[in-house]
Image 1 (cartoon, rainbow, N blue to C red):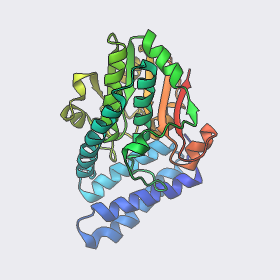
Image 2 (image 1 turned 90 degrees about the horizontal axis):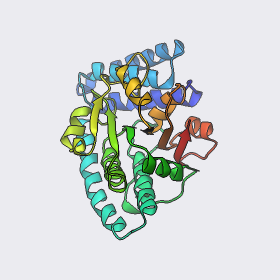
Image 3 (image 1 turned 90 degrees about the vertical axis):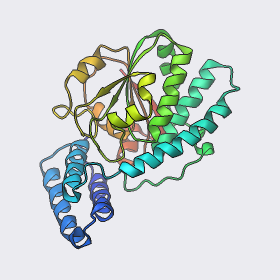
Image 4 (image 1 turned 45 degrees about the vertical axis):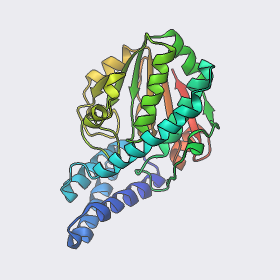
Length: 290
C-alpha cells in the first residue's frame, strides 16, 4: 500500500510516542526524537510502502532505545487480559448448537480483538465482552470462509497482535472442532515488531498444540518481499485457504499476487485503509480476495 499523507502523521506520532515512553535516559529524549523524525522522513522520500517504512522505523526505535522488545510487558498484559475474556466468551457461546453460528461468533470476536493495537495513532481502545460480540460487519464474507473451511484441509493463518492472538487461538480451536481434518499453519514474527506476537510468545501461550508454527525469519511488519523467509510464500501458495489478520497484513498482501483464496480479517482503524475498502473508519471486515 502506497503512503498517504495521513500515514505520515501516523508514523511520526506513533514513533515519537515510543521514543518518549521507551527512552530511559530522559536527557536523550529530545535527541532521539529529532533522530527518528529525520530517519522516517528519509525513508518516506525513498517512496517505500507504508509497512516497509513502519518496519524500518521500528527497527530504529529499538536501536535508539537499546531495547529489542519495547512492548514486552504490554504484550504479556494483553495476553493475560485476553485469556480472561476468552473464558467469558467461551461460556457465552457454549450453548450455541449451530456450527455456522458458533463459527461466526468466534470469527467476529477475533476481528473485534484486532482493536488491541498500539500502532495506529488515531486509534484508541477499551475492551470488554460486549464489544467482542459486536455483530456488525462492514464487509461480510464469513459465509464464504466457513464454506471453504468445511470443504478444504490446508489453512495458513497469518497472526497479528499479542492479546488478539488468544482470540485467534479460540477461533482455531473452533475451526478444528467443526472440521477435525484441517491442517493449520500459523505464521508469526521471529522478532519483535510493535506489540505483534512473536514465535517464542506463540510457543509460550500453547498455540503449537493446535497448529504448526512457522516463523517469518524477520521482525518485518508483514510478509514484505525481501524482508522475510521466501519459503513462506511457497507454503502459502500450496495451501487451500489463507487467512490474514490485521491492517499490516492487508496493506502488504493486497499488492501481492497469491494463488490461493485469501481472507482478510481486520478492523479498519484508519482512513487510508477504510477508503480502500469503501467503508467507514472502525468498520469490521472479513474480505475474500481471489
